[in-house]
Image 1 (cartoon, rainbow, N blue to C red):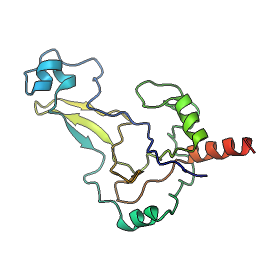
Image 2: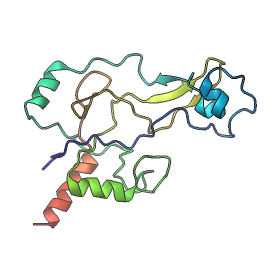
Image 3: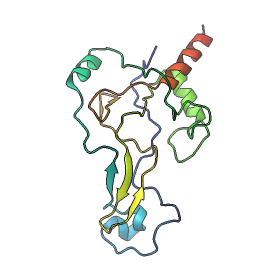
Amino acid sequence: MEGDGDSVIMCGAGGGPPEPEGGWPEEIAPCCYGSIDGGWAECDCWVPVFNAPAQQRPNQEHKRLLAAGVKPTTRQGMCTDCAYRPGSPEKSGDESYAGGPDFLEGIAHRGERFWCHQGLLIVTAWRHPSGLEVPGHPGAYCPPVVDGVPYQVDGSAGLLCAGWAARRRALTAATR
């Protein structure tokens, strides 16, 4: 039941830096082809700043067990900012997050795995060689993913989202 699918689903915003509050500075000295064509937003020189000094390599024992068919562990309880909580940005339809209420309901219904974000690598800011730094999106998670499983900063396998698991159980019970 828990996570029968092979999908890797997270609600993070991907790509480069989000537009800073108040917009981009007017002037940009071209530093790459992207900046010539599209300004700050398309510049290829942005460097991500992460929430941890280093991402550990995925734990080999976890990889072996998961490859052997052992089901991933589900987080004990919903985290305070779980995508499945009422009022979350995802449940509220915040378009800056990849996923909305229908998406979350659909993946729970289909049994497609949804991973908890706790402990995963996240881009907290973007730094440009010019010195400009903009905050990262709060959902810009970018963990290493091996065989469909995201790995936490400490190298351990990610946990399935407790909110997703609870919704999945409720939907499964309702169809019996």
